[in-house]
Length: 378
Image 1 (cartoon, rainbow, N blue to C red):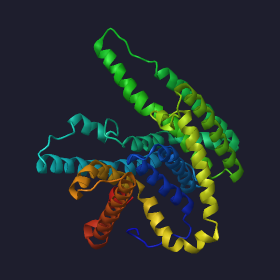
Image 2 (image 1 turned 180 degrees about the horizontal axis):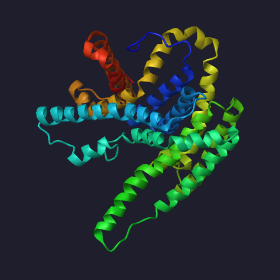
Image 3 (image 1 turned 45 degrees about the vertical axis):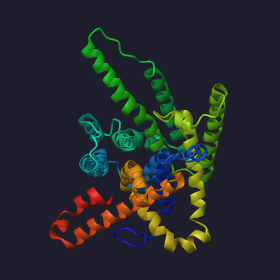
Image 4 (image 1 turned 120 degrees about the vertical axis):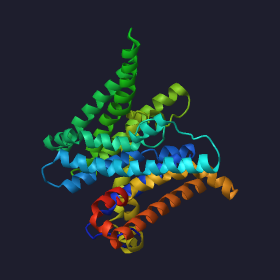
């Protein structure tokens, strides 16, 4: 199903492909307004993707020395270059569709456009890209922590201590209100607090810990992962009962996601670890081994294309109301979810097929194969 091959390599770990596929569908499900029960169940998607990223990093690195410069350069370019290309297409398409064809006022200011290229601001969804860039930035510290811990248990304890420090920082930042006699200094302090602390630090530290947990997946046995999952469940239930007692209703973990807090992460760790254990068992069963010949290529394609599928779903979510009006039908939530998912996968498959054909059949494409791959095929 991908632009290069019809079947996955024999040594590919399909467990992580399945987990990434579940993760991207859960993210799309969240963006298509699932009901409260489904929305809570799926609310482990981003931490799952971060943990899988950590696990895949650990597998690809092996026992080789870690080069931060090489990893940061490759990872950031592979993340930000496709996003910038998509944003150029997105804002251009918005101008054509909204302003030229429908005569509407252009909905995005220059500030919004500029902030979007920095993965901040009001354009919904880009915060996930920012999270992965931040993780790449602090990866040396995460790797050092995990490598210097002699056992998985010690590494987990260190990550928990770091996360506890983050919770203290979060509680203090929530109370920080810059108040200076000089307006210019006060505005700078507020901007620093809003961007550096709220948009970066309060995401880098906790998701860095989650990335570290993913690195430990390579070391941890099923018993350790089951204990971690059970602990997450206990913490989730305890905090859920506490918050629900105060509010007199069940509080979804979504309320503690921006920036992330313990209630949100406890559920996410519980669900992600439980899902990993189930998938690990699934790929070893006779059912999977005898039927994976038709399912595995689709899963591998989706898994290896999650960034572009995610970007395309941002486009289709923006124009889903227009599509609904054009077809003159009402979209139920499940129909919207499947429509956005299929259109996003179809657009990804289409653009990858076109680009791969261009690379294979033109001199320019062959000469710039690596660049084209980074920009459009990852």
